[in-house]
Image (cartoon, rainbow, N blue to C red; front, side, top):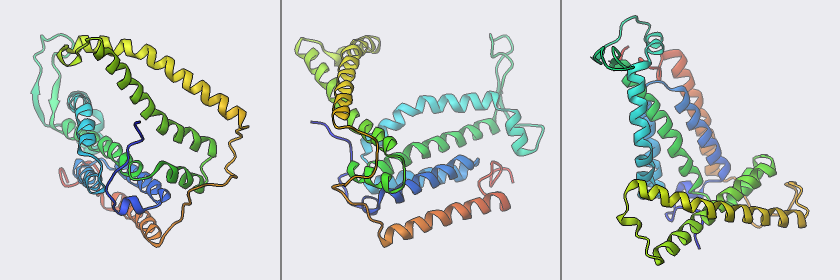
Length: 283
């Protein structure tokens, strides 16, 4: 039986209350969203990625994320280099950009376009920005038991219906993955060798898996609906919980630290330009 992925290693992140980790995810996401400099964005991404490794997030998961995102990141850098001209000029307060190369004018559609250095650098900022937001999620989610997560969200005064939907989704994904593995194993027993197939053939096979997978998922969701109705589910958080969520001294220290971090980065950004696009690169 597959289960929701959590880390096996004990660290400070596994000992923190989920409310603390919620604040951490919000603060880091806000900072990553506001910062425009690839220097500060890259440093933040490196810190969050290092924290993920320290917390015990599997390298296999991190490498899978990178493999999936790399094609999109390459596309973002190329598009920003060619087309993000006006915004970069406003950020740098300049009328001229540094050209790298120009596409021959006779080329269809993209003929005459110029790749700019500043656009590529801004594209790297978007890459680091999104990668930080992607990595901060497993740092908060994978280091928390799903039951502690539910209680922590309820204690944070998040509506219980939202908490229930969130927890049900986290429990439902492993079941879907188990269904996929079961269907693939059944097809292998019938002589289907996915390892020897090309990418197009694999896509066709996975498309055929989607039909029974969706039908089984709908059947499970209908059973869950029947169970909730039979138990008169009202979405009220006024109930007893097997697991308790308590804030420790470490939680309070970390919460204060995250709030101070947000305040300091905001002051540095607006008063001294730390985190703005030209910082260290064009200042």
